[in-house]
Length: 323
Image 1 (spheres, rainbow, N blue to C red):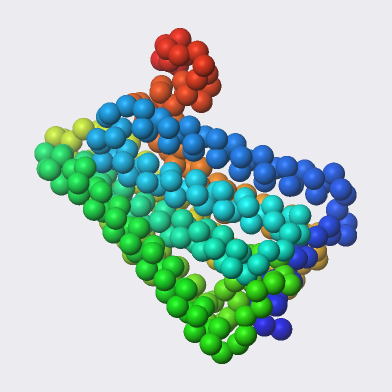
Image 2 (image 1 turned 90 degrees about the vertical axis):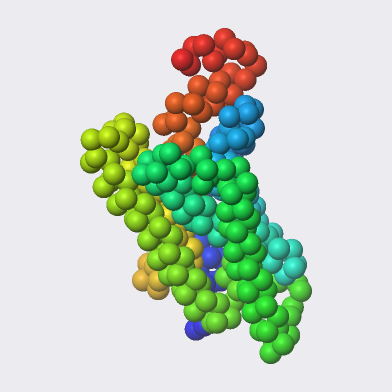
């Protein structure tokens, strides 16, 4: 059986009502995924509003990069939720509509790890070269870095599109899909599996080296007596969280491979549970870590974010309480 058919069959089996599961358990899993996704969408949207509420957030490279990361995470959450709902309710759409939705998801997924690499380098410069940080990471240079990140993601998408065009020169295209919309049904040819592995490996290696290199540099500088110990320690914690976030994001890119491998050995009810747990921890959790890393730890953002999250209708009273 081909990878395409095995992947599609696994997804259909997962999203149908598996034997051995009660209706309450299926409803519970669905509500867990939809509820958690909507909750983090709300948090991310409020965070995006917060990052545009004060001039300091719009003029500081760290917060500009964070805003870009949150945009990508929010778009990915929305596209992933739409794909999940379409599959859950067994709604079949045209190939073009499904392809557009999947490409948006893949595009936003590509932006996050590259942005994490730039943010790690920014932290390295801030701690190891504090006197040059303001001249290196200006608003203009940060904008250029973001443009390069987006251009890289666009190139990634264009490569996939050209590969699809090549595949469809060999086979006929059925616009009315007989299968549920998913990444597997759009990129069904074996060539995409090889491309996915090569892209994920290259991305993990390059971004991982950037984060680890920044971590080593900050750790070395933090030992110096002339360095701000508190700032160095916070930077190390942030870089470590970036590495964890990167690992989850790139593991999520292999989500289909993991599910297909498990489908060969497990029954449908077990596969259903594993699928939903993996979906929460690999597709949803990495997209909310930015809010947790910066929203709770950053002393500049936290009071404004807490005010906007908890009681936006009470004005400055809530802000005073959060302090």
